[in-house]
Image 1 (cartoon, helix red, strand yellow):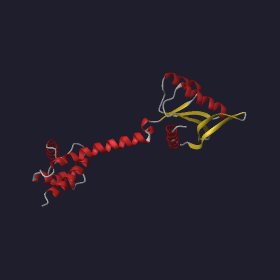
Image 2 (image 1 turned 45 degrees about the vertical axis):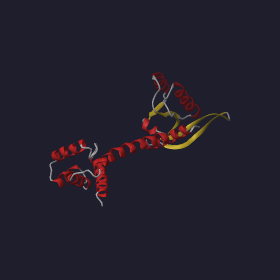
Image 3 (image 1 turned 135 degrees about the vertical axis):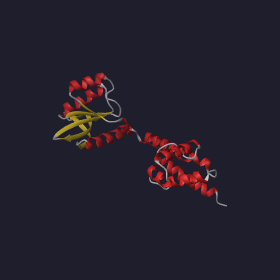
Image 4 (image 1 turned 60 degrees about the vertical axis):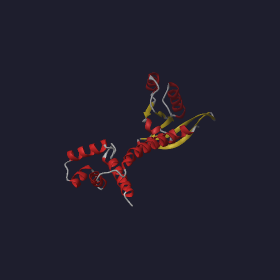
Length: 210
């Protein structure tokens, strides 16, 4: 069993439990006349009904539906597939005709650790680049810019910053847009601007030390 399939089974098990299923067994062997002929990825139960659950790391095709149906007949349990969706209309038609239920989970749940790491890494790099870019202005700020940045850095939100500066929200909006055009603050929500302001003020204070 591949690592990707093991991860998919863990995801499927957690999803089933969140839907009210109780996971009874994993990798349950299917025995016919004392011969192991197959296995069921997950045996689950809900409302007194047991399900033979087949988990697909990808999309459900006709072969997957047939396998789930055969396992259900051999085990006497209701067939259930957990996957990203159907691969084509043929799979949909066969599942409907054979009475195989399919639970579709969002693609995001199937992101493997390497993909998740890369996604997080890219997001962190983008955020750091955005909030640190104004550091190029370090040592070149005017007193007015420092005053505005100080209010932003010490305020919980945009409205609090406007109040601290004695400005209306519209006036502060115009001031911040001017600061963005000057490269003093980044584009983004107030939290990103506040983080950037704190970093730039720290750099500014260090730059002005004798």
